[in-house]
Amino acid sequence: MRYRFGTFELVPETHELLAGGLPRPIEPQVFDLLHHLVRERDRVVSQEELIEAIWKSRIVSDSAISARISAARSAIGDDGRRQEWIRTVPRRGFRFVGRVELMALQPDTVTSSDGSDRQRVGFCRSADGTRIAYATSGGGYPLVKAGHWLTHLEHDWHSPIWRPFLDRLDASFHVMRYDQRGNGLSEWDVRDFSLDRCVEDLEAVVETCRIERFALYGTSQGVPIAIAYAVRHPQKVSHLVLQGGYEKGRLIRAAESDRAQGEAILALIRYGWGRANSPFIDAFATMFIPEGSREQIESLAELQRHTTSPENAVSLRSAVDRFDVSGLLERVAVPTLVIHARDDGIHPFEQGCRLASGIPDAEFLMLESRNHVILPQEKAWPVLFEAIERFVLHTGPPDRTESS
Image (tube, rainbow, N blue to C red; front, side, top):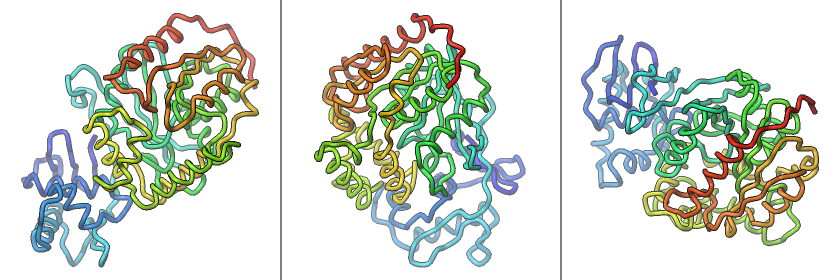
C-alpha cells in the first residue's frame, strides 16, 4: 500500500519516502512518525499516542518529539509556520491534513510474508455516496465476506488473528472482503449505520467486483447483513455460510442478561478504546478470544487504534446490537450452513440454533470452542474450514433463478 500526497509517496513496505518518484533520505524513526500520522489522518493523534506508537512508551522529552515532528515536516517540504501537511492542534496533538491518495502497489510488489499471494485494494461508493474500501485475494470459487465490526484491510493482512484466516480461505477461494462503513480504510465520517445502509455497502462491492454468483460468508454482525442480502438477491448467492451470528442484536433480545452485556460492552468502549494494557482490552479479549495467545490478545488493541475512532466504535456497536433479521429467516432461499461455537462469549449458542431452525433446510455445525473468532491453535480450526470447503465446493447449488 502506498500513500500519495502532493509530489510525495510513502511506501511502508520498503520504508521509503519518494519525492517526484525519487527516494528522499529520512531517518527510520521520522519515517515511522510520518507513516503513523498519514495512516491516522482522519483524526488528531495525541502526543501520548505517538510516544506509545513510535517510542514504545519509553520516556521521551517534549523537545525530542518536537524535533521529530520538525524533521517529518522538513522531509515533505512543510514547516511549523505554514503547516500545509502536518498541523499542530493546540493541547491535543497533531493531524495530517493534506489530501492523500491511497494506492495498491503493483501486483509484483505486493506480496504476503512468504511471497505466495497478494491482495489488491480498491474503492467504490455505496448508494448514499459513502466510500467503501474492498480487497481481493486468493484464487478459486468466488467467496464474498460480509463486512463486520473491527476490520482494517491493510492491518488485517498482517494480523496474527486474521492473516492465518485469510490464508486458509485464499487457498480454496477467490476472496472479496471490505471494510464496513465507519472503520478501516472505508469512510469514517458517517452517521447512518443501519442494516439497510450496511447491505447497500455489500451491494456496492459485489457490483464493483462484477461477480455474477458467489458464496456469501458472514460472521458475527456480518451474519444479519448476509441474510438480508441473500433475501434481496437470491439469484446471486450460491451458498450462504453464517458463523457466530445472531437473528436479534443483544440490545433487543428478550433476555435481560444479553441486554446488560450489550450496555457493558458500550461502557467499556467509551472508556477504554484503543488503550494498550488497559483493563478494557483484557475484558474485550476475554470475550472475543478467551483462549488467544498474548500476541493475539495484544493485536486486538492495535487493531482498535487502526480501525476506527472511539465515537464510531460506540455508534457502530449500538447499531449492530439492534439489528433484527428474525422476520427474514423463512425467506432465505439459498443453501445455508450455520456454524456456532458451543461456548461463544459474544453471541450465545442459542442464537446459532435460532438461525439454523428458522432458515429452511439449513445445515448446522457446532464447534467445540470458547472463542468468537476461531484461532489456528484450536482443534476447531480445521473443522471450520473443512466444513466451509465441503459445503461450498462439493455441494452443488440448486438452479435457482427466482428473485425476491
